[in-house]
Image 1: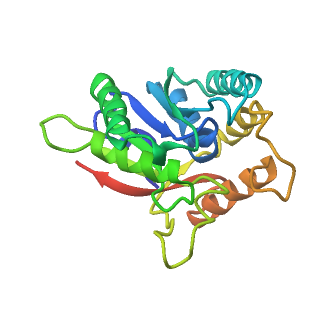
Image 2: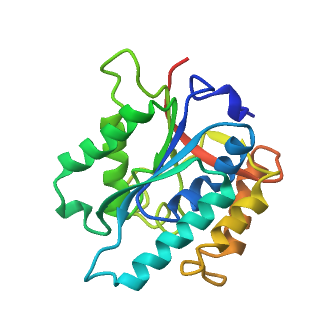
Amino acid sequence: MTKVSSFGGDPTAPVLIVAPHPDDEVLGVGGTIARLAHEGREVHVAIVTRGQPPRFDAAQIATVQAEAEAAHGHLGITQTHWLDFPAAELAEHPHGALNAGLGKLVADLAPSLIFAPHPGDIHLDHQLSFLSTLVASRPHQHDYPATIMAYETVSETNWNAPYLTPPFVPNVFVDITDHLETKLAAFCLFKSQVKGPPHERSVETLRALATLRGATVHRAAAEGFVLVRNVI
């Protein structure tokens, strides 16, 4: 089992989680975020999109933003960065703008470890966020993010076409046994997004997934990731 503090390049450098929408970061990386913050790492979250009228009304937008702030505070996140691209419309937005937005954030923060959505997710916002994360993290100069990992998002990662799109097959597991309850509590703070079982976006599903990922490596609870790059 890889210890969190032993990967990701410089352990004193920030960690960045790229989330296409508010709650993706909690669903896929919440336990790891809590563990990293507990271990003293500076953790930043980039929320790529924000709901915009007329697709989302002002009350919905304000509610989700307030929920994100509460959840991030509970996890110990250092700072939340709202990039404000239009939710569910990234495919219609100039891709160069997204590259530039994430590129500036990566340059400003200089993270050694980045978590990004999996490229096989069914939502185009997730796919494009992953691609722009790679563009922003290109090793075209001496300093760049040493480690990139892709995370899974229930109801997005597993709803794409089997065998036709990249499958999520985790090869890095982070033990979140001591931080699972913190993750679940943070998810519950997204009250507008929480569903009852057997819906995938339920507390019961997240607990079951953590148990499954943990059992894979003989731990009580874990989050799984796909390693994209690791420079040692």
